[in-house]
Length: 199
Length: 199
Image (cartoon, rainbow over all chains, first blue to last red; front, side, top):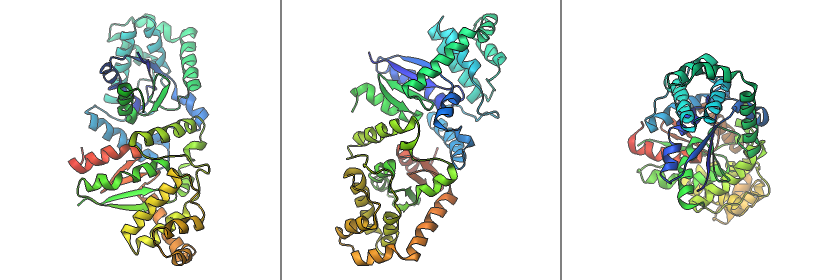
């Protein structure tokens, strides 16, 4: 079975859209996906890029394309009033939970993305991440403690560094085995790669 | 009939790939396409971007993705030894010819793209552009004169400025009416937009 890795930042609109498709797409090929949130800001320091919405000319197009791409998928979408936001708390919560329950961690990731991009709720504060997790039955006190745990912080740092080492420079970024695909608009190619083994 | 405008730079691999599809795609919807070469370098001065292949991390991916995208389309592709190159001569030749024969201008554009991205031939020298045009029965002396004509130079400058005014920040860039689509990987959406009138 070809391993699939799904890299994303919780503040990435295209990451959100990809998150709605990637597992079903993989499952249709009998494959499963490892979700790997990382910090896009750390990547931008290397590539010299910045959030699309802050770029001359590209910003207006990006705002239109986020919404248009979501409509095409029938996905709820709003560009949050605060965008982009820091996603350390969200990503740390994910990794802490993933060590305990991989399924619950994906469920939490989906809830965080939904809160941010469907409801426009700022998910940067640790308290908000904990509140969303608590709604899913996750131990709020344990998660709050984890978010301040140096080991959990280190885990996210290591994951981000590993992503960069692997060549991840945007969100979403998918590997099918060693084959890299950048962007939500490459998921059809990901599906084809899974079907054909490459071209 | 919805007008379709196809903006591209002759040094853009994704522009080349889109050029192979755009007219057939439009024709399938009874539409025709106005081709509009422009100078991506002028846009980069505004956006602060640079050629993909020169960007940290993104360069390696771009090289792989150019070739992979071409293979998926069954299109011949090589990344030319000189890349990117100046495309003033190519674009000026196009506009000069388009005023005389729109069909011949598209045919020349296809030949220029083919020479550069299928054969790896440097199309930046005016002499090369003229030689390629001559192979198509175009008057070499008249074209050589045109490439030094201030009015022809001004035409390309005006087209590039108009593209920027319209929001074109990359290549390829397609408008279906007023709806903008950036990237060769948006052509399926272009086709859908033509079918549905939008979503």
